[in-house]
Amino acid sequence: EVPNDNECLKTIYKIGSYIKNSYHWEHLYYFNSASLKKVVESANMEIIIGTQLQRYSLANHLGWIIKRKGGYQDVYKIFNSKFINKIYSKLLIYKGVADSIFFICKKRG
Image: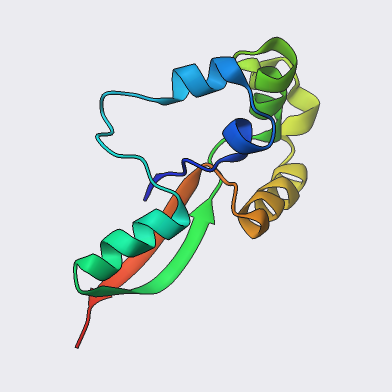
């Protein structure tokens, strides 16, 4: 699992304050699904399961969209519903813009 450099807060909503906040020294490299796939293939591995995960809620994203900062999941509590977030997550994963990429791989051959 790695952060998705194509996540929606960067690519769809284009929140400048989020983009500045999202790059950390803990991550030496950033990937999207295509670039991570190239790394896996260059390591002579194949992807068994390739998907994305959405860790942050719609309420959190609304904080970034409206207030240009995180932590608003406690303010926009109506959007913390499991039902709403399940649908929101599925949509982001389907579009390839969830916040994390998740691969399970095995060695070729």
